[in-house]
Length: 456
Ligand code: GLN
Image 1: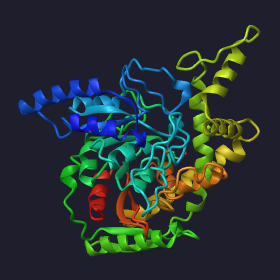
Image 2: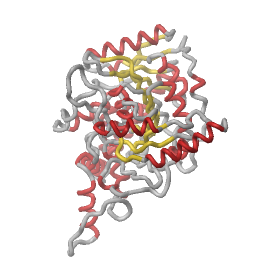
Image 3: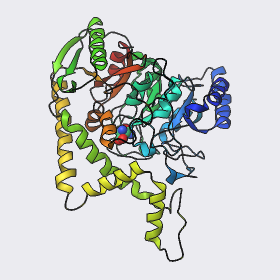
Image 4: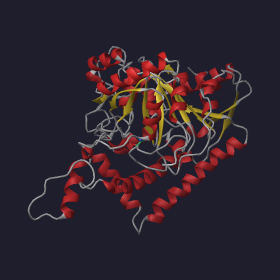
């Protein structure tokens, strides 16, 4: 714990940790010490972790990367952090993220972006750690913690993992409790671990997972011993390679990485099969209707009354002006864009044309996956991202759709509620890490982690 606290202090330039909690860490470390000495220590006991700012942590600033939650210190602890603390984990602090988890580069954060510890070749240019869990990814990659909590609504664990050479899993929807995690798009949001190895990922996931009566969408299923499922044996398993993920203009390096990963799984004894997921091309447009729709509803609670920031109002101002000023000051431009899109697609005249249509597309995407799984596919291998990490600032002035294209390979998994993992599998010609994604059957994270280990 002390070594990690020191490392965090000297890595301030990465802007990964945005709230430091050394007192809590030292107290938890002392408690963990007692348990370890008494021989009562589960696997996560004494492990220093970082927590994405999206999680409510009791008495500790929890701002979701937003100005509107300035000064908000929850009275309660999220279920997931409670579980990890009960298992003896040590919280070093809260981690940077895109505002309300909306973004792919960390640049929408009210704290300013986190920085990727990796550099491209001899260049000094600062690279994005990805988003929205960019602080988590940067902290794990820079050895500032042994594992970090992330969340993934459309790729926010897997894309930053791929950009930083770390492992990140988005579990099956319902595997981990959402209670106490600030909501972005409730039907897509899922928390997951980010670590430096698949084994660590399995250990941390096991401690986080499980049924929670406080989250009605959490599944009442037993949590398997994920670590014990890492046998390394994938002989006879069938891995699908979906042809629709071979996009026009995909960089050759990504194409090569994908072939290498395929070969690694074949060498490990897997059967490789070409498959089709025909509705893939509609996933991104459907996601960027459904996610903003749910966000516009979830973010309605930030009204200047109940949480965080409230704007100063003039003598003639009433409650409407207070709401308007607070939300105009408190939300950044990307969040405002999503709230406006979401409100529009849910409005009376456009609901059927946009929101309902997107829901139908979502059902078709889910069915695509069900069909291939019913047909004997055990896991699906795809690229995690359409490129390796890009330079900070290089996309901020571009059309927001350019940024949304980062999620092209990841959003299908959230729409279908499936588990998906990003595993570092190679490097690009500038020496930057690149990751592949494996998608698994619902509730089969253990089997998925086992396949993932063959790509490390
Ligand atoms: N980049 C995607 C978005 O901006 C995904 C974010 C996420 O998974 N939280 O919506």
